[in-house]
Amino acid sequence: MDQQTAQKFIDELWMDSIVPELVEYIRIPAKSPHFDADWASNGYVEDAVRQVFNWCKAQDVNGIELEIVRLEGRTPLIFMEISAQGDADPEDTILMYGHLDKQPEMTGWAADLGPWKPLIRDDKLYGRGGADDGYAAYSSLAAIMAVQQQGLPHARIVVIIEACEESGSYDLPYYIEHLRDRIGEPTLVVCLDSGAGNYEQLWLTVSLRGMASGTLRVDVLNEGVHSGYASGVVPSSFRIMQQLFSRLEDRTTGKVLPDYLYAPIPGQRLAQTQAMADALGDEVWQAYPFVAGVEPMAADNVERILNRTWRPALSYTGVQGIPSLQDAGNVLRPYTAMKLSMRIPATVDGEAASLAMKETLEANPPSGAQVSFSPDQAASGWNAPEVAPWLHAALEKGSQESFNRPVMYMGEGGTIPFMAMLGDFYPQAQFMITGVLGPQSNAHGPNEFLHIPFARKLTTCVAQVIADHCQRDN
Image: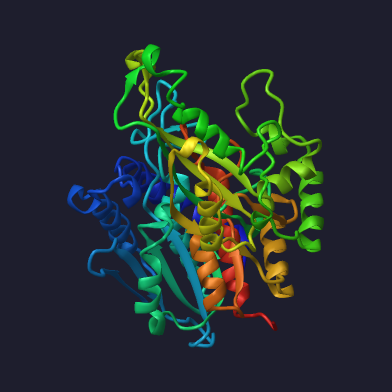
């Protein structure tokens, strides 16, 4: 493939068509079902599905068939099938994946920004969902079109765009089973929902952490009582909550305590982590919007990367039962509930970790309090198979020609449930897991942005891999 010609084609398609589409997509509050219980009646997910589908249907792609697949009671899924072109094996299959559901609004957006208010500034498109992961459907088709524009052969390609990823992809297994015969047996999976260490080279994700999350609740009273009357007699639900937290992590260091949440780190991943730390230096931690004076955890950048990619870590992401400051009275509250998000190593089973956490937290409740842990969104991580020589060569070529820098391999701290599922279904497949979630892009948080020049170059690298896939020896 002539990569310069492909880049010119992709740049024009992005600026003339894809960016305007993403602007309109960002305006749609298509929150994932866990964050919008009435998603079906509200219609925003349907609006986003229709917008993405209509754009894809309007593109000039040889051999494409596409439809919106619906299973009763589940979020819809866009399914595209592009027949093999040229002399490529018609049974050889590439599976491309993305999602279009979004995280909730989150607070803290800059005054001129907002989750459903798209704004382009300094080559960045701000707004919820553009980078995570609305661009994926557009980028996937653009890469395919760039290959076809040069008359090059490519394998049969299946594109799946789901609408439940931010809720743990709980609808997806039903669609994969429903469509299994139509999907076939992919020899390459391309996923555009991951991260990048910087915006200056191609990054391939080779591991993803899993997640064991849920709601921990402590009840001590049937109703709130005046704190002057009750304190000293009635135990504090918040203090009991803190005691329970100490079963999971060291209060001083944040080190997760239960052994069942750890796994050995493969030697290859340690070497790749060292290379990533060498390439990024202090960008490893300077990418975060620290308050002045706050220091990063761990002693060096290798340890910081390992903490984020191959070690468990606990976050407290939501609270209930505690009034806002302006509504806080002198009351000993009846209960405290908190949402816990435990990230777990790639090779730890998410369901098993959730059940073990439940047992740890509910055993022998302090002060005889009523303690419950309700798991949700359990998801296993993913550890990539060894990268085949042909894929490494295609990635390296794409990165060198697009960025004049080598491809880098990285672990990612987030979770893409689809990857663990595909790893089990298609153990012989190669994986190109990549994405645009680089420094400060802030997916899930305020001021999320899509780095447009990087997204265009990434699309061209994907095209290079598609073109080289059918020329591989193995």
